[in-house]
Length: 282
Ligand code: G3H
Ligand code: 13P
Ligand code: ZN
Ligand code: NA
Image (tube, rainbow, N blue to C red):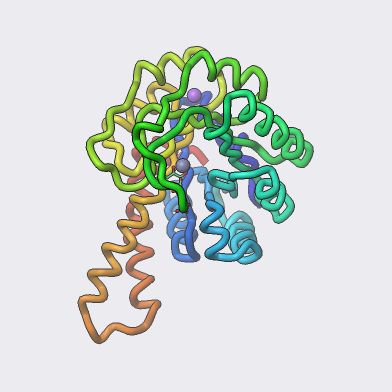
C-alpha cells in the first residue's frame, strides 16, 4: 500500500541520501517510475501536479497509484506536487494521496505559515505527510511563468522560523534551480543550502532538478537535500524516443510508440535513482 512520504524521507535524512520525487503524467510514466524503483530496490515518491491530475483524471490517477503501491515490492508514496490551495489538498487527501505539497511560496511569509499549518492540521489527522516551500524558483510551473528576477532564494533565518512554527515534514528550498528547461547554466547557492541545513533538521527538497549537473546534485545531497524533483528530464527522454520511433512512417500502433518511450524514460529514472543514492534503500 501507499506509505506517507515521511516514512521514506526520515530514513533518507538519517542516512544521507535523496529520494526522487518523480512526476507521473500518464500511465507509461507511472510504469517507468515504479519499474525502475523496483529494479533498483529503491523507495520512490510518485507525484502528480494539479495539471497532471486534470490530464489523467483524479479517479484514474489515484487508482493507478494505489495499484502501483499494492503491486510494488518497494515503498511508494503518492504525493501532490505543488498543491495550490487548501481545497485542492483536501480533495487529494480524500481521494487517497498519502502525501501533499502545499505551495504557499508566493504568499507573504506569515500567510505561507498560516496556510501550511491549516494543511498540516488536516493532513496529520489522517496520517498524510506535508511538504511546504519557502522562497521562489524561476521557470515554468503549469500555466504560470515565474520571471527570473522574481525568483527569490530561501532565507535561512526564515527557514528556521518556518519549520519551528509549522513542524512541516519536508521543506522545499530555493537555492538557484528553476523548473523546466534552463535558459543558462544554473548557479546553485551551496553556501545558503549548507546554512539552512545546519539550522533546520527536516528533510530538504530540491525542485527543478532536471537541468542540474550530476556534480551539483551530488553536492546538494551532501549538504542535506533528501528529496529531488524531476519531471522535465523524463519528459524529454520519453519524447526523444517517440520522435525517433515516428521516423518510421509505417508505425501507427500507440503501443509500439509508447512502449519504447516508456523504456527510455525508465532508463533515465534508473540513472537518477543511482545518482541520488536511494538504490538498495527500500
Ligand atoms: O514543478 C512543476 C512540475 O514540473 C509540474 O509541472 O504543472 O506542467 O505538470 P506541470
Ligand atoms: P523539473 O521539471 O525542472 O524537473 O522540475 C520538477 C519539479 O520541481 C516538480 O515539482
Ligand atoms: Zn517543483
Ligand atoms: Na537533510
